[in-house]
Image 1 (cartoon, one colour):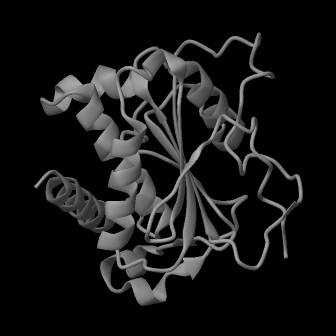
Image 2 (cartoon, rainbow, N blue to C red):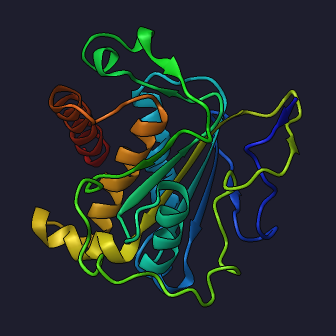
Length: 229
C-alpha cells in the first residue's frame, strides 16, 4: 500500500531504530548539540511505556526528533503558519485519530480519523508565542535542514509485515530548557513531559477545550509519574 505521507529517512544513520520486544519501531534522533544532555534509550523507553499505558499492543512505528528552535520554527511556519518556535509538534499519520471535542470528554471509541495533511498539532505551550516569537525566521540555511519523515509527499511503500506508522513527535530542546524552570524541573524532565504530550496527540487526545485539556494533561502527568516510579 502506498502511503503518500511517508518519506524515506533523511540519512541511513540519522534515525537508528532501537529494537523492542514489544514490536514497536521507535526511532530517536537527537541533534548533536544536545546528545550529551539526553539519552536516546531513555526516550525510547518512555515512548514504549506511553504506548503500553494507552493499551496499544499492536506493532507501531514512531519517530522522535529532538532539535533546536530554528528547525522547529521552520516546521511550525511551514505546517501551521505560526512564525515562531514552539516546544513540541506532533505529525500524525494518515491512519492516526484525533478526538473530537465531545469524544475527548466521553469515549476514545468515538474518535474520528483525520488526514495526516490536516493533522499537525502544536504542542504543550502552543497557545502562546514563545520568547523571541516576534522575530521572523531567517530565510538562509532552512532548505537543507532535515524534516520529519512524514513532512513531504514522496510515495513510500510499506511492506505488509511492517508496523503501522503512527507519526512523529518533534521537540525543541532549547524551548524545553527555557520553560523547564516554570515547572521546577530539569530540561530533560521537560523533554519527557513534551514527549508524552506529543504521543498522546498521536494517539487521539486533544486539548482544544477546557475539559479536553484537563483530561489530556491529567493523563500526561500520570504517565510521566508512573514511568519514574
